[in-house]
Image (cartoon, rainbow, N blue to C red; front, side):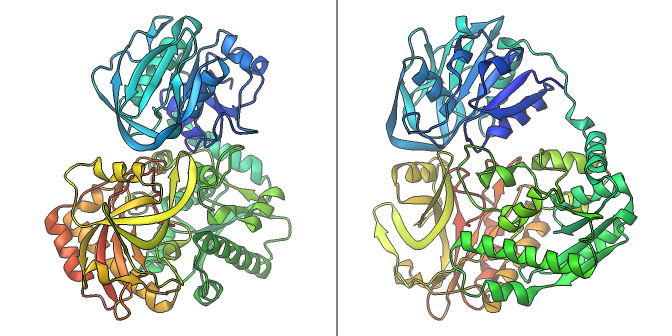
Length: 589
């Protein structure tokens, strides 16, 4: 199928999200390398240049064929794409005084970017909430460009040369938190480009099943399932495509699971019609390998490699390596994107299904990932089409590495540091700022802010942090607390498991779990020698996991949680994460 829109990948974490948003409009889109020659793009009705972590002045930074900008094909530059368009055409790009990550307010200065009867900001008026993730910015647009909008820290937040069909925005219209983003993309795709609808995302089940049969051929498929939405839907697709006799599944209990998880998975997979399903108890193996791990990337690599060892042992013991079997996985797009899976993307975090051992299986052609082109909301839509039970389909996402990445570890005994903005905790977490990975400190403030803008503004002005939390309850004064050396021990994992169970039970009973997309509960090694850990609550709303915003729970529910969490032995404090994604990732590691 010939794409009407091509998205050029400049390394942005949201590159494939742009293509998916265009497909959601009913227009077929593909992703291609940013350096794709203009001659290969002939016939496209439009091209979009993605964001990316580079600076246009960096040696080897992503670029495009300059002829594209003179081809007559409408082009939309997003974030780095805007900067690159400006740079190539004679504008001026500079590093800003400070970064702009998360929510921003866009003031439209002009809205007459007309081309072929369309307007980039048609139907959009007044101040608009948009989503930013950048440090560099266009300071002066190229000759012939109109400035269409600005924010408090970005004077050129949108620009256009409609006579040439060239448009650009510094913000990200593809993410859900840019409220006018869907209209901006609609205006470009249908107004500027003149596209027609030719794509039905709901009709993909048959083509995915055909793909499974084509890849599997006469081979059977073996799945290591997690019980989450992704692996469940992928497994169900394979069951439908090949039949239950040709699809085997094993659930590996790593010892990093939630309370009651193994029994839940066993019961629900039986209901799916799985005839060859087993549970492998590998808790001792995983906890042994992780006994001294502290760094989050080390944890993910170790977990991934242990999965490979377990897989290899099971595959060999059951004769699954005789050439008649391939490995199935529920990998979805964000897994590959955030792991640097696109050509120019920065590594945000290594997913357990993209470590070296798994990559070797991929290289050998012994793997199938039916959902690798889909996002979480699309996976759920496919699941509904397959009549997967809501008990499985509507579960909150849960990370493959399990509680290991929600149980932070440290060798430090450093104390908090008092700053004018709050307390700098001796704990570091993973963030994503300007499409790049950061590993920075956490700032704790003492009260919930009145405005949603306070936490982002603190992060934007402080280079040493990527996350803000509020102190909800502590057993001691915050100034007397410190990092407490701690590892992935059975005791700490049980503490986190118990805290997670409390939060899930109270969230479900109150109905709050239906108001959030995901609710990670984190254990951080911060407290006192007698109470060595603190619990962090992280309820967020999202569509696909690529961006996320904080959700405030009712005061009565929070008070009930604090009462039960503070009674757990070893818990010294309860904190509430106020940070959107970006600049912080959803998980702390």
